[in-house]
Amino acid sequence: MKAIMNRRSIRKYTDQMVSDDQVKSLLEAAMCAPSAGNEQPWHFVVIRDRQLLDKVPQYHPYSSMTKQASVAILICADSRLNKYDVDYWVQDCAAATENLLLAVQDLGLGAVWLGVYPRQERVAGLRQLFNIPEEVIPFALVPVGYAAEHKGAENRYREDRVHLNNW
Image (cartoon, rainbow, N blue to C red; front, side, top):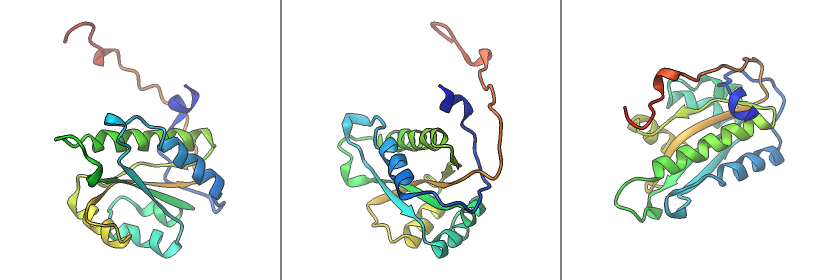
């Protein structure tokens, strides 16, 4: 509960590097997410190359923090793994992204969820930048680093959004 209640979007990072072991822990958490039919349609592009991180804002208008991030993780879905007639991969990748963000909080790091899909210009741009095959869909980008800003927990519970038994 502590990681859930304290997780906040962090957009400013220090120069301290996120270790390979920490990145592996984040990916392990992401891959523990539930998925429809246990399909696990996700793939992850770990981006450490400074030149690539600096180019991301050319393709995503709200990603200037990638220029400070130690690493970014691009969550993608492999459409070839879709065994249903609907796109459950969106829910699957959203669950993986949230697991990753909770692990970031638990490790004492900072991160922010940058939406990519369904913005086709972002999908196409990041697909090009990272040489992603056509059948793989970039879903979300998560810049990660040591927080250079600190935000307190925020109670977002709203009684007016809770309906008992019916609307």
